[in-house]
Image (cartoon, rainbow, N blue to C red):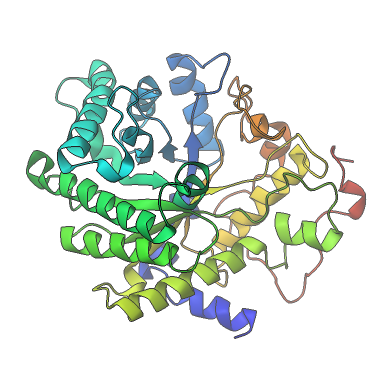
Length: 399
């Protein structure tokens, strides 16, 4: 199947309502302050950061990586906009050093205790800001019960379990988390919150789709929205000392160029459709919402990374999201991330993923090139194949 056919195939499985929605309805961003030396005040979040994200960049959905540590900010984000929706990660809950319970030994009672404590801890901060009757789970659309399980397997579990054993352990965990929401407050949130793993961008044989299928079956039984979630990057510049111009254009994207991100979405949709058919999942593929839970391009740290190139990535991605002929049309994309975290360990790019600086200012080049939204612009894939930047700009600062 050629790429044009794949694009048409992919778009056929989008929500029928996508064409009527604003592209900004599909914008989200990751929010974390865990590695910031100076964290923003509540006043700054409510009065500066949230309005700039929403009104200037069009972002109103958030992925919260550790809602316990960032509970005051969960309250701030809801205070600034009661319609705010969250994806919340809970995978960190499964390790309590003082209990020493292995992932394979967790029981339904353990999972229920951990989740109840989690909900109550975050709820305490939210209720302090919004009143005792406010239920913060009403703002949650998705609970990610495990982030990037394949990466975690390599880090922690490959010497303990075979991959097949690990897969079954995660399926069992998915059941326990879903069972919790099916009974918590008489199942109030079972039909509104989607429980799922959050994958890396690669579909790994005999691992990714079995977990996705299990989640889809449990979602269907609970009556929850059907969803598959993945952190999909067009490319990752860590370790690259050089890009060819063609590679960079495919990574960053440009007007008239099919990006790696689009190709990844086509691949994921085909895999989901095939798995649903093969496993007999009682879900229409057209009703399965594929969400990109992380995607971005850092602004500093290694060659061929700059604010300018980051800005081009976001501008290109947004234009693709607006384009009815793009596989990204109708897809929710959570940009990584809202704020720079200056203490984040790892590669030299890690402190530089933010759309904003640590003090909450939109980065200059990102603000300059962020598209004017819903302006009727449409990408011209056939007649304008050249990227909107020149090779002389392929350096760490804008020319």
